[in-house]
View 1 (tube, rainbow over the protein chains, first blue to last red):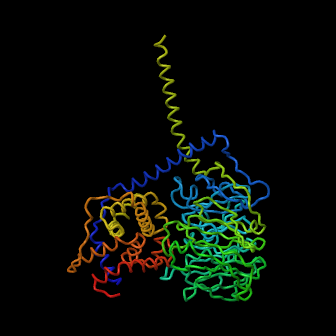
View 2 (spheres, each protein chain N blue to C red; view 1 turned 90 degrees about the vertical axis):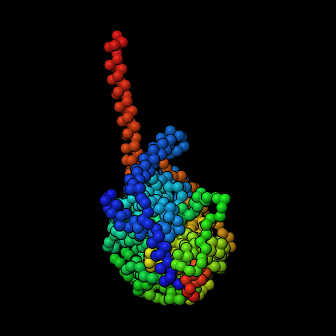
View 3 (cartoon, chains in turn cyan, brown; view 1 turned 30 degrees about the vertical axis):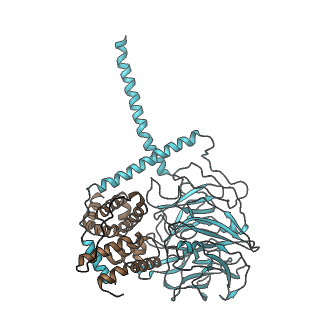
Length: 468
Length: 163
């Protein structure tokens, strides 16, 4: 049927003459660009003035009280919030992103997206990206110790297909040759924060998607160790792609199976394959925190409900049950019984005291069948839950609407430091580019006022002799 | 910078117009879509050409703009006292066929229509279509399947094909 359809579409298309353009598209676009920046500068100037005169709006960060802890929630950052490279936040507790205020492109930088880093003292700093749909915990991952962030690209960052940003210094280092690669995937951090497992896109598109290969990148020496062979990757499986054993001596990684399911493969620390296990369409590797704390088991998430090609209602009604594999053999094994979670998607962050800490994704209303259930666009909100062996489920971090992805440092999770106060973002410092544009914007009215004052003074002086 | 933009527009305007027409199903709406898309492209032209070929960006911007406009369609609804004209197939000429396909396309949700246009008019692969629509390859497959299923009754009867 597609050949006649192609011919008919071509015939239909031929009926459309070239659109009449007023010839001002370029000027309109540039005018919009300038206007957006001016409006933003004025807004920021007004907000800065407001912040300066209204009591209670601090220019200093609001530190989390006492010992660093995972906050109960986060606030949306200001859109002019300073970037990590400008004012490093230091060791971080939380990394998050979404489509809410302050997390998307702003009038100063319409293109691209951002993620917010929350330092352990409560400071908010931003990481900026050429792509506006990157997700914390999937495309961009916080290191287990909270000191580093791994991503495939970074605005103003160094060349390379893996960019690691040190949150203590604000400096970034690139790994791999060439320009930043689109859709490159950060799979998992080694628990000692010394290496990153990445999924490296290789070659062009095929009918089944990009070819890819796992590569283990050692951050200190820059050594790149290819893991296993090249395969056609599934671009929407990043929530459940790989996990490291707690001692860092092995890891598991997924890949699409030939029959449409998923293969889970285990490797030792050198990348040598140990075993392969085929997962059903209803099973997912639990996520980056899949290994049990003793390293003996690997948690899987089993979907009770619609598994593939689901509509919104079917996705929302999914029930997720945890089961376990033996980390040494890949065979089924027993493990702590945890409560079932209902939600469109669930991924595991890690463990604390027998409880599994997971992120639950809630969906927008207009999700279409087949959309990525953890995607930037379909997700409306995420929350962090603990699933305890006593059967209780508790929400430990509930960000505001508009936060659609989140990652938490493993050391805070492991120590179970939940319930910290919700830090307020500080109005200042702002990005240098914003300050520069605001200054320019304020300079013009200041010059106008100064010119007016000079003119008035001269006029008054000229009239004085006549008065006498 | 402006010269390179103008050169791109003059070279690609006809093709972009045809794609916009198939997405919108209406000449005026297609002209609006092309204009809005190109203004947006001009706004970010430095970044667009920094990535090499502008076509993937422009295609993605057009599809995204089209879906956004569709989502705001309630603002654009025009109430009339007469029912809108509908094509009446008489089974005698290719014009009727094209009109029927156009009518069937118009009934598709915007993302399914975009899949049909990108796959069967722009001849993109499934992976490139997924990139343009910012979705997974499996979503492209399922959207294509659903769109063809919706189009099949019209096409089977009017094109004389059976599968």
